[in-house]
Length: 323
Ligand code: RIB
Ligand code: CA
Image (cartoon, rainbow, N blue to C red; front, side, top):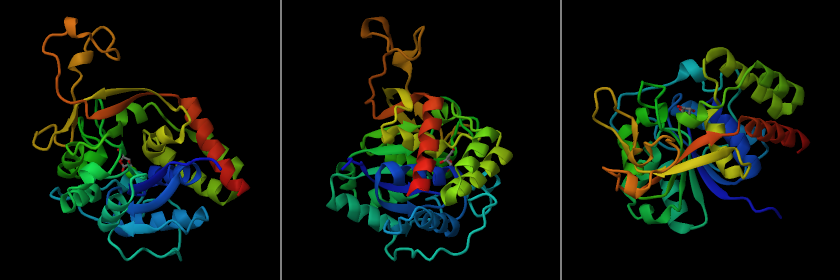
């Protein structure tokens, strides 16, 4: 029996979240899905998560609702990118799959207080994870690692400096990034290396089947409505599928800016040890004055194999057709 990494996924489906869930359900051992408000409101993100479990025949995976609103920030949505219901032009009825009664934050606390072999994937604003850390501080020692789609090593998307997931709830992101939990961050510097196109939509249509057709319509909306159809969340989770999609990463200290007039929501990466002729190579101690000494709390994904990602994506959609 093939080993699959046990994960809990906190997400805001959202078109790219849906692709990420399809990859995770195929390649990882998904123990639960928690929805958060982000791309669209919680009423849709939790509904869409339940729909994905039905579409993939995995209604055994429990789905929970967390918070709809950020901790302090004003509401920011991305319905222009994902559609008002979060799944583009796809029309679905109310899924038969029920929503769990337990609050998503309490599910996160119970999961990590009672298991030490489950990892956390975050694909939306970090409100739920931060609230769980505030309610149960011992989680800082209990969550083994976090794969976070969020932030950026260079520029933002929601603002020149802030990526959407971090900007929606900067205070929550600060709590998570300061928690000491090992974080693997897949930011826009990585995901912008992936640009999906109309030919990819046609390929999904050719694969067909319920999952292929759903994916084709979702991606069709994204390609038609976004200048940058990167499928950020799907690119992020590919790191843990063992597919070799992420080809270079670097460990640096990362802080989250919560106060700057132009930088609120920015993931501030300390690249001082890398500012040599090749910014991807660390400068030796002897050759680097004002060296950064802050703890390298985050592993930042830097380079991406676009063709390997496509191979993974299309093989996954074909796999569903064979189930
Ligand atoms: O900035 C991209 C991220 O924000 C993705 O997770 C997308 O789904 C949105 O949540
Ligand atoms: Ca998302």
